[in-house]
Length: 400
Ligand code: ATP
Ligand code: MG
Image 1: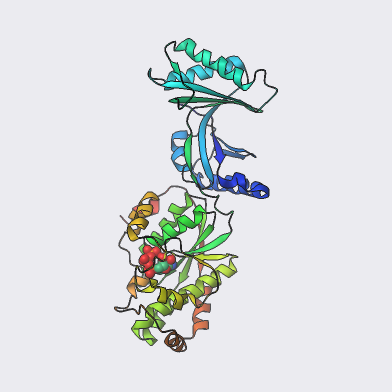
Image 2 (image 1 turned 180 degrees about the vertical axis):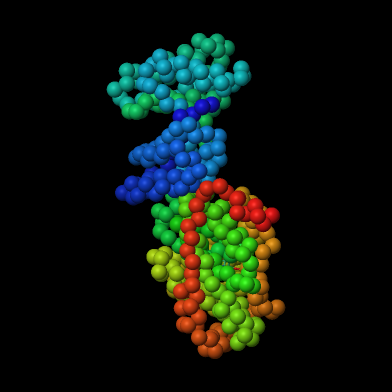
């Protein structure tokens, strides 16, 4: 069917009273960014609905992408026609001719939002119901759970006809809950954590620690590609690359290996917090899952978390690996995550990290490091790059 627009119904946002306007504007922006590859698409956010004017863009390509954007309850691809009964009737008949295969039951749901329109909702339903029976005399009308529900809505700007209601991603528009720094490795867990934080409206910036030449260009690209997968849920994401080589070399050189992991993580968290502050973020998000590895015991978390009072959101903390993988597959990050490019933690992983680090020893060992100097130099070397939707996998193809 050649649709002229998609009518979007807002999710939870309708309950947000005064913030409604901000929510709608944010969602409109996110939709534009997530669908940036369709240049003719126009987005109009109104109080109770959002309209995506297709201007010739293909709804078949847009629909699967729209189902990912957070903050949308459901949507209906619609055809807009003049508010003229003869025109509406002809279009309703034409649509039924395309959909009806001879066995379905049907119903017309009429709605008159424009009260100046010549007939009311009931009369409209009757009029169009009859028009359908005229062309399909054997068709059965059914009010409860019909196979086809043809909706006709008379609004100020025109009459809208639709028959499909497609479920949206739910959640809140990304950005409406404030900003957080996602610690994004190349692994399976952190992209899922980012996705889940986005679901509740958190705008994320991806902070990635890279240790060239120990970590490769491909590992960095992998993290960027993972970030790009997340763009689909709420628009552009800033990717922040942090040079971590000096810190890792220094830790390896001057500390006993049992404490490499704990102190590395503390340095990562300190840097992430500095970046958060500089970029006006409110929280930090990571992909820690309780008990998964040595750094993710409660004892380790306490020792690592000591360096920051910033709230840390850990969306996958209580999930089993298989549950995390299930989401990773659904959001299409899994395949990227399992590419074998080592990240900085794998390469510097000690053979026997402490699962119960002693906090006094942690402090004692850190005295051997020029913590402030190391942090300042790494911070000075961060690189920020905006990751947008666009042609998904072009760069990625080189590494297959
Ligand atoms: P993931 O699958 O997310 O890599 P993981 O199970 O491998 O997680 P760790 O490697 O212990 O766990 O990392 C725990 C968390 O620390 C990650 O989920 C991520 O949030 C953060 N992290 C680890 N390595 C990096 C990195 N190179 N850059 C940014 N954050 C990282
Ligand atoms: Mg990892």
